[in-house]
Image (cartoon, rainbow, N blue to C red; front, side, top):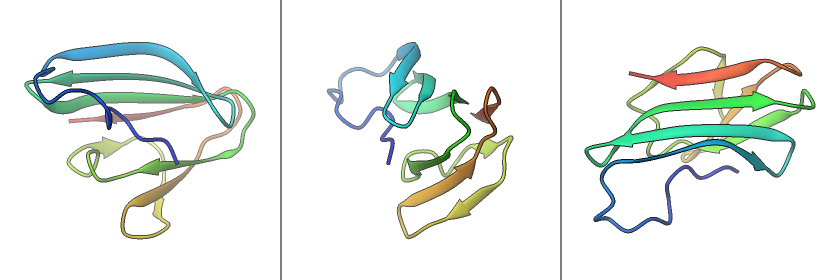
Length: 88
């Protein structure tokens, strides 16, 4: 599963990255403001399901259908070339 901003120092309150390639053929962009994730985009390059750790995303709305796989993981179906957007 993808973990967004799980291994950064707590002192990094404002940070972002763009188009990071991940396992499973996804491009991920994300932004954190004041210590809270404010925006995440996940683009599928292959049309596979995407598993995302949902713990620090649950306060955001998602543009794609989200199915909870377990207590901490969400499954998102993203068609090839499509982007799921998590935002406030």
